Length: 171
Image (cartoon, rainbow, N blue to C red; front, side, top):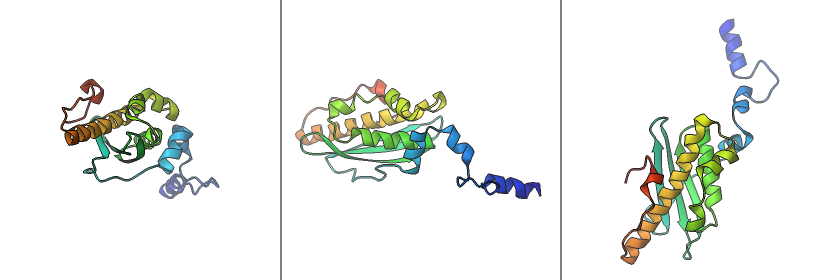
């Protein structure tokens, strides 16, 4: 009997509440839930496209892995962004927000996006701040990859972003 009651309560069948897990929604800010339930820009571009920059970052302490790609037009503006993330709801939400915020911006504008802005927008608790840090790192890694491709195509030497911003990223 206890097992059946627990199962019914766990599945949300014991109440008239249409949400099976009402407790979960109280743990996350509505912005996190929105981006988790309706993630924007999930997918990927061809990583060999010279107009696409790819950033792949991970957080060994929690196992989150984030791939963020940005696609540029000929004038240096980001026209689209995609992501794939393996991780918690906060990591997925941070990725989704990042792709929304980079669209229509130049490289200089995108590099001003800080993890603290993403964390504030999503109201992330301190234990989830690494998710917003991953999103910032992914943006910077994608820009770095794009710049390397452009410099290679132009036969120039690559000027990279300060590696202190790219903690946790392999070369």
